Image (cartoon, rainbow, N blue to C red; front, side, top):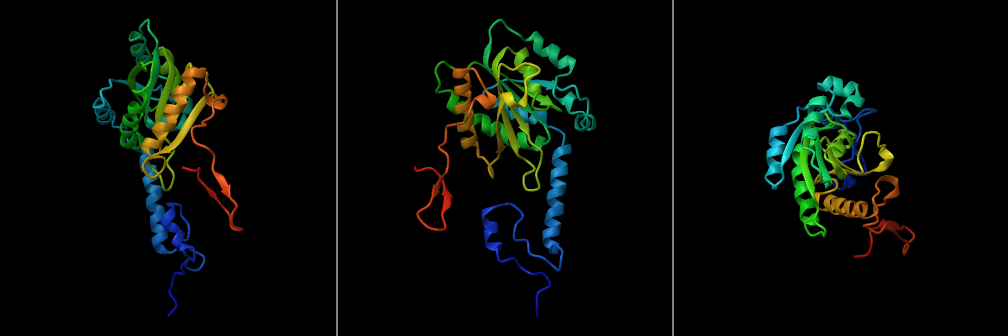
Length: 268
């Protein structure tokens, strides 16, 4: 008897990717199982966007690394406003700005650290501490030693809120760890944004971005390695963004030894 749902001959490829390929079909529709999986993924993405940021829990985990933390809030007073007014998420509210201004010292710091919920607080709750641990291990070998700011935990924050914070903390560089827009296979993806000489008005072209930081994407050691490379290069050359390229890994090369050639990684 012919099965109701037809299988896909590419089904073996599914073990290599979380992408929705080779799902099969039932007539012109998806099989029930694949349809239910899609609905579940969609629900997880929506939940990630609206999940309240566990600032105390995330701050406690980061303090376990020997870092201090500060609390801050963007100018977006609540989640609905945050989603409808991206501009408000890009700057601090006045009480937070005043609190950071009161902590200003005459000495600059080399690196300002910011953790913001963004569009997935789940992402920074799961990954910010582990990423920071890997990054600090690499930076502690550098000379001169990095002078770090407290880690500023921002509720209802977007990437550019780091520009306000970096300027107020007198930081030469700012690194923003933020929850990225959830995808249907990655509701917990964290992004990293690095900006030299942060101040309000910086554009996205003046930042470097490392995205999809999570064990199933760009894992912590690799994200930390790439971040450390960019941080060191930015400190030396005093630039970030389109002017600063990540040349830490040689580009993939083409293996043309056979007619059916494929992309391969660099020689080890």
